Length: 266
Image (cartoon, rainbow, N blue to C red; front, side, top):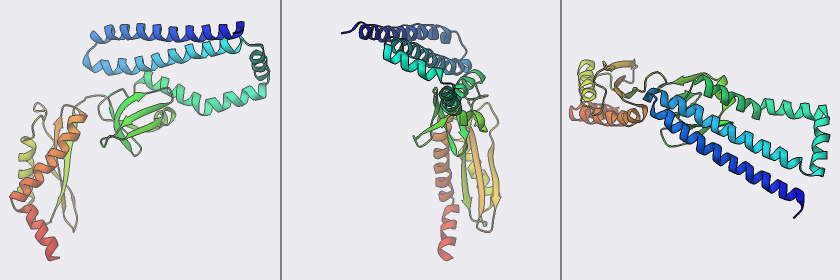
């Protein structure tokens, strides 16, 4: 094995060891810091910590690659030729600034400004879900139906983002039901409120939104009923349970059956 190849292997091995050491140190420091933080601030720290760790690893890898390239005469000569060409350098920088670098810078700004954090439930465009990861280029969301949505950091930074949990983790579990216009609104709302008050796990120290008439059309009346839940995950589950309970109760009262009879008659 040549001298240059040996140097390259040593540099790469040293880079790998450096990454492991930095990762171990940051994990220990992170656990100590998190142990003394309020629960509300732990997501903020975790978001910044994860991105900082990845940036550190990327910098170490970049330094190792540069050292390896400069260890070989042929590679060093080619690198000098490329760097000496202002046109090529300008093209590379321009392309990076437009795509990769833009996403990287946007990811750093997201980690610093905290418009979204790990674990937040957000809505961006037509995507809504829980923030699972904020990487160097993409932010990953987990939707309610367990899909993964990857959003470029630049797009996330330039879009209008609705964050449902950044101020308060308490989330709304809401059900919408459309009933025939002949249904008595007072009777329907009383049933819906009864089911909302009976929903297990709801937040009891905050006035609930209760039921309301959302829309009235010739085809029917749309009602909404909601309760506050401790977090977005429980809210998603509670919304389904609330809808089922309301439909079951309305069926027992004959209101849903009335709707079916009207549809059959028409």
